[in-house]
Image (cartoon, rainbow, N blue to C red; front, side):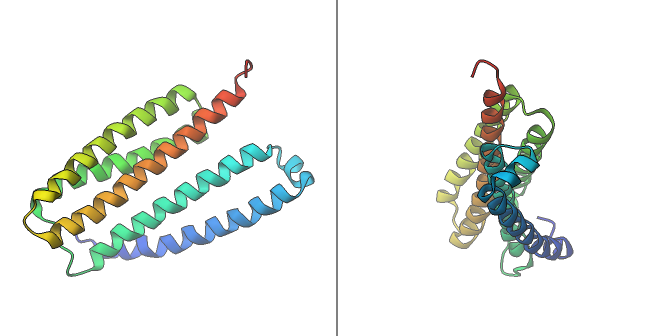
Length: 180
């Protein structure tokens, strides 16, 4: 929204870093699950390793969508209509906070209630994104509607990845409950 091409170029470059980190994670994950000794040394079960691998995959996908959004900034033909600025800025902030919150819950609390709360918050954000997306059908300029639709799709997917991480937190919490 601010046409910050430096930030956009930096974000695009950082996606390549995220891809490399995920490739490294994948390599170590495969090594770990192929050897019981590796799993034992790590101090995690295979299920936990898979969950962390899955979370890494979700975060790598978030980076892909950040790169997708950033690439629109460097595209001189891409102009977001002013009527959508406030809504997109608000939804982008919500999407960003959802992934931050999901990561925080995973690393700090691993509490099912926090995960459930995040799922509900994400559902509300997704409803707002869907509502704005429906308004695009009546937008007079097809190119602008397509551009806003692409942005909304990336925001929607980011929020869905947050939900996926929240579900992992809930699974971990349930697994640690003594009655299960």
